[in-house]
Length: 161
Image 1: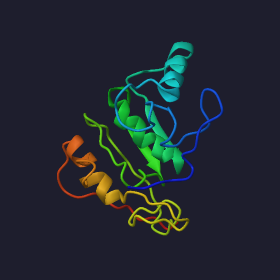
Image 2: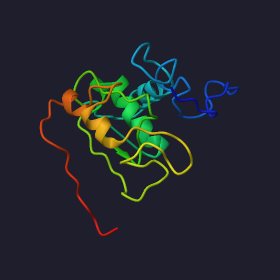
Image 3: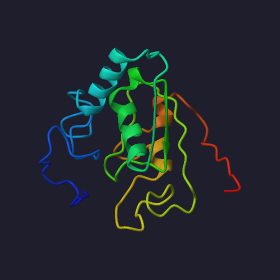
């Protein structure tokens, strides 16, 4: 349904950058089939070369990094203890939830117009999935509340910032 001009042919090898267009986790950049792109490979390398407690691996990131955290949990839920995306979302039409529960703390500012939390259209013309739909589902995803076997609503913790 949505077309982004940023999804152009990649000329770098192995990849250009993190988007839903590149094989960062899966060949299409989204979905759960054929997990094995850049990010799983990076995690494999870190686990092999460093002393990593593989029962306590977490993902976080800001903006596109928040999108990466969400997609990592969808594609590799057994590998992550939790995620905490900061001002990240799924592009509209690409929302997904993990097959098994992955604890989630989503951090957003209420005045963010770049990757807004509560509306789909951003200030720069991109369409994102509102957090309400990420948590409780839409026509693309059953939602994270279902994956995590949660009932009730989300919680908002306002700050002075």
